[in-house]
Length: 237
Image 1 (cartoon, rainbow, N blue to C red):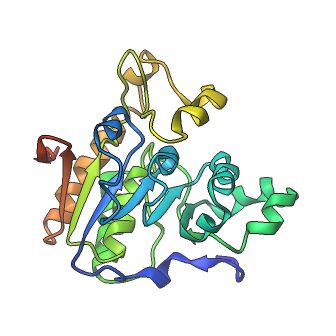
Image 2: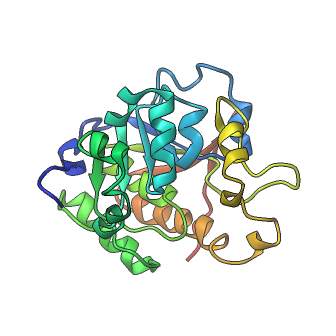
């Protein structure tokens, strides 16, 4: 980690014993009334911060989101937890806006490439031991957001959407400025046909693995649906 970077590890156990909500950008986010998450500790995933700007933290690694955070409120940069392999930051180093804001967000380490169940086990073991590690994901930063919640000290991690799938009508929520973003960045949405292939299988699989691994340490990972309540996540062996 570069010396100028704010270190994610400094947030460890900030919310020890609390419930932390991980908010995906999928269609079910639209089911929640305005203000529902205002009194909750929450982490948005990718573009969902545009629908839930009052979230505790914004999490992503795609650089395309940073100008949108600035549009929303430059002060929000301080609650962005960005998972970038350090080399990927190089593509922005000559951008004027990057030079102005690079010290503001919080950074966490993640290696490039896919992850196995054993990789997730090693990460969870390190989190429980309160050790620094390279956090892992498989096709989605939702996996990282769950790991972030655990590092923050969550005893319960509640996941909204984060399934990596879409309906035939829409692939993401429409609330706030989310629809505006996805119209401007149409390539960010994959077709239904593409969703029958990786990484769409490994997205829910990774969440299932994390639910099972964290569960062994007494950290509960569940889904929540507005109007229905909590739902257990099936643990796939």
